[in-house]
Length: 553
Image (cartoon, rainbow, N blue to C red; front, top):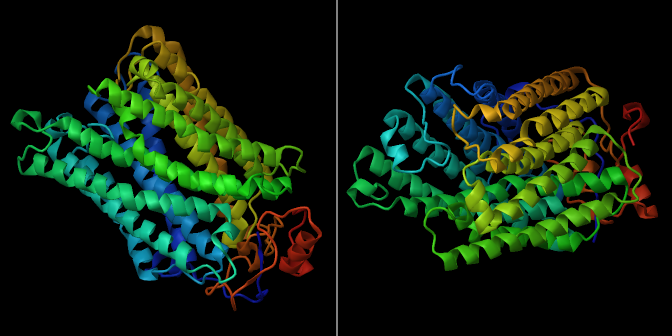
């Protein structure tokens, strides 16, 4: 395994702020456009979640009308999945980091890259404007026949929006696949790539294979809704179970589209802040490919209560349990990496380590619901809500925060305030667990999800969950203030504040337009910390002392 030493560039021209509001083809600008735009939608989706939790604070439906409640949880899930996690991780971090990590000057198709981003903001606005006509209210799964008899205009907007966002995702997946396979510097083999690039390679394959199936399902559902066909409408002879198969063929791999890039981020962050080589590089790399493949053959475990034949249930139960193996390989490798390391417990490391522990909780409950008898018991209960959020918030969102704290200096040339970062982490960790951990109990006791009114015996636990959600909402305030203030007036960062060994740390912060003056030359592995060569490489990447960040380790 090798790493790189690139020419050190000084006096880099700062990208004008207007560039971030333009049709830029610079992968770094597009990456930040993705990050900021998706975070805005995260705040909006979070507001919808707070309205849902406020309704659930009491057993009676006394805060919003029942139909409005259905609209709120439908749009909350839609925004969080399609406008926050997927574009943030794949489009945001992927765009900013992948070309830098492989020594490329840009993505393979810069204009296609820009188009893929600019599909997202108007689609998100379209989703929000649907509140004026009554948004979709059949859940983010939009199962027929329910989706064919609810608000027609809102459902049509939802279908069009998902098709557009799917198109954007396909464009991005194609771009990343070609970039990683064809634009690495000559001396970088696949086994020399940073693990984040392996994660993006596996993610891109999933996007290209699975997303067209969802798009096809949306087109057929749109015909049923607007034209009166009967592909999925049982009143006309259609089969709604076929829709479920098409929907979940994409939407379970979508879980891995949302988590694989986060796995890659954590694989980069933990070795740096533990000052140890990553444990099991090839095992982690190849397990990403295994997850990508296995993720395509487990979709029907969402359908154990949909009349699935017993023999098919057995196949999908076994396949779902098997996918825990490559995931477990990653977890054990991360723990082994941290074990005995010289830990720098900065905000990035705290979020990274919390990611591992929170995702393990989600993974364990995932193995539980893979079992047919147990899944039948907890299907459509709050156990599933808890499991989903431990995977996608405890996993993906904690990973996003870890990545933001880690690469913010590279993106902006400024350091985030560590004290406020730890305040943010504490509030997020406490609020998240207070909100979602008790939901496991609600599910085991039989409380159904997607209902505004419930048995009063569940009131106490629901109140605790709602208070936790409020703490979680408040936790975003110190982060937003910290990010905005630090971007404007934070302490200046040198080119390599964390003393990392991957290629992005060999160029100034923020990177120049063309990234590198010439192709960098690999001289050390990306995770070879603790070696004399690592000290030499790190020293060559640091800016002059006048620009060094006080206290950066």
